[in-house]
Length: 193
Image (cartoon, rainbow, N blue to C red):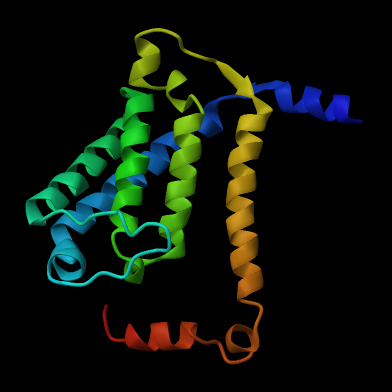
């Protein structure tokens, strides 16, 4: 039984879905970082405050000045574009995940579970050689045409763990019976076009 499971996990599969994940993840993160830079959010939540709530064990994570914050966000944006293109992939994925995590660890009041998911997926993206197919790095040599099935299983398992947990956390009367906090969120956004 275990031997059969291992054979299925090691069986080569088409890389199209992994390449699509890399490109979409990189592009989504690039758009998010461009939006962060253009919206003034950095000034509002990381430049203006004089006190920051730190995560337990991460009090050492510093908040650079305004120029440092904007430089960090710009570097993370460039790294996300490189991830999408598969250009200097391992370095870009590492810079992206470390930079994005740094931005999130500066202040616990900015926590959003999707940011936590981005760090987890970014770590997996760095660990897996997703830049070896349908990428600029692959054009320089070392392209893969197949990957072991467990690479896809690992990404699916990470997504499933987060979304199943989120679904279970929402299985309360507030969400199921009263429709809250969704009702509050939607009511607050009822007037924009």
